[in-house]
Length: 258
Image (cartoon, rainbow, N blue to C red; front, side, top):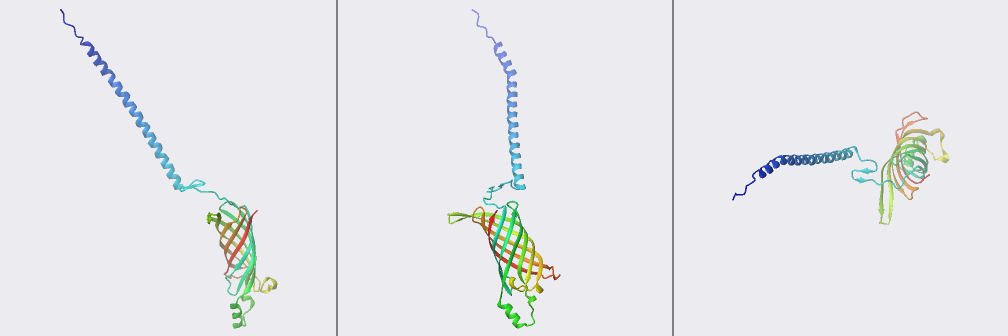
């Protein structure tokens, strides 16, 4: 009886097939790994680009209505054409103190800039004891040595620096505004009040006006203003001199948005 023949060729063919297929599997695996690495590199590049754009935004400044600290709330109250009427106190003159009123009209261009087109006022001057003492001690003193502000006009550019709101006793919200002004001034000075002007000793002086103001909103259209102004009188128009005097005004006014 013949022994069973062992087919040694079958394992040989299987081995050759395995050798041919294994390199293909390796190449496909390497290609897949390469694609995954490339995708990872693209994601890293996109993330790095986004971080660079964010850094550029922070360096260049916050975009409109947003800062690096988060969104900035827009003003609830804003002005267009403002008309204000108020009381004035002129305390700087050592020889008389002025009490009066003023009227102003301001055009607001936006939430930052405005033009105080005119601000006119008058003062009723009350003599101090110092003036009487000087006159008693120096009989040769003349009225022209004591000119006081009687009328004035200012035209100023306004820059609104701060706007905010505060809670009052957790019952209501107060909106406020802080601003500065700078511009030109025309001042009429006289030793006497408006009811007894001395035209021989009148002065018309040109100067500059600087000031700071604080506003409280009472409603969307009405507000209360407190102003501190300093007017430096530089040139005397009718006397052609350089007085270099200044006048300080403290004012309280009620404003309405037209």
